[in-house]
Length: 274
Image (cartoon, rainbow, N blue to C red; front, side, top):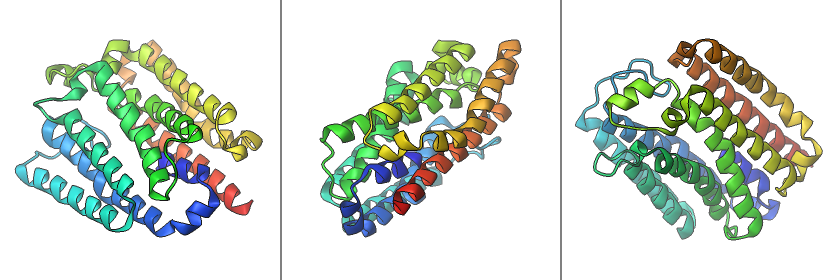
């Protein structure tokens, strides 16, 4: 959701007013159908038995789960085809294709540390940002939107390696070599921290989001709990690598998601009041 709202913050008010129905449909299609389908398809291909994502003890997967992912993708695409511009449909089709080859056993980009990371970095950050801009009739090739797409990827990409930090043993058994495995526990913290800082500085100095530049301490206040926990968790892992576990990872993910959503929603409220 943060990437979606960030795109809404940047979009011109005139385009937003004229394209509200398409924007609402895109939000529903992504968050109710496309994203859940992508996650479910990944679980189907992984056939996880250990903790994964927000699920501590995943249920056994079956062919029914695969058919459910196909149904969800089709429903999401149908809604977008009916209510959104053709360019939005094409971008979402590309996103679905990328999410499939990321997990599909015959290609499985996720088993390659750099390719796997770049797939998530580009398609779940930059591509989603550009898709939102496309849905309201914006020009996705404008320099400002290209910059914001990269910033979106930096912010999203900063969180992604941390979600892999407790799965090193499971991934290794499955023949998957994630970026987090290559970097190690402390390397993952450092890498994620660098991306977060780069994304924040990008919003501050290189975006057209004047609200952020003017009220930067306001959104930063929402991020402080997440930053504080990040530093504390890194300290715990420095003393004992066993602290890079499912419980601590889920705390970090949920807290980070809550803080990031509060930050962008607060900026959206400021925009509406201005």
